[in-house]
Image (tube, rainbow, N blue to C red):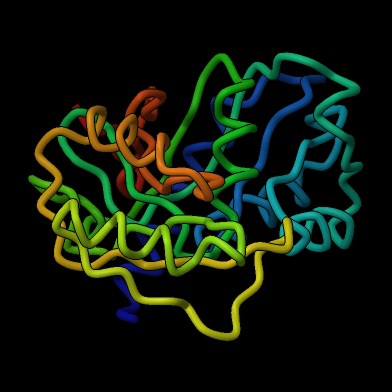
Length: 216
């Protein structure tokens, strides 16, 4: 990965910190860009009361930085959720799940008033789908779900050796050209055995940061 992309991630993480309300409880996502954000939070650990984490990986990093992690059920609606993305289109619809934390990420995003997404410029696309779409699946349903996805024009590949924090598997769906992400998300959600789809379209990002700039 180029130094420029890493710098864009770091700048986006620093910019995201400006959206955090003092004394609030915020949602924190997962991934390499979020790691920069957690580090920035750690340097300003008195800024927030606590955080709701979307993964065991982020929980560990937050705890190491002295930030208290709480359960979503104990806090209700969050003012802010901060996360990255694998792809982002002009409508701020996203593909997420490269780190296999998509279900918890989607739950925390849904429970948050504002979703700030941090990306580098390489993640900005006109049409979603070049990055394989992650789908979390109940293990016994893998074959059935894969066949249903093939009927819809996708090529699902089992991410062998990966188990989600929820104990499920990931199918990465290649070959999609997602010009209507809201409709595809709704359709895939109806397939029995799918736990979560890595399309964040019904609930897209509210603000997208590319480096230290806000995407218009």
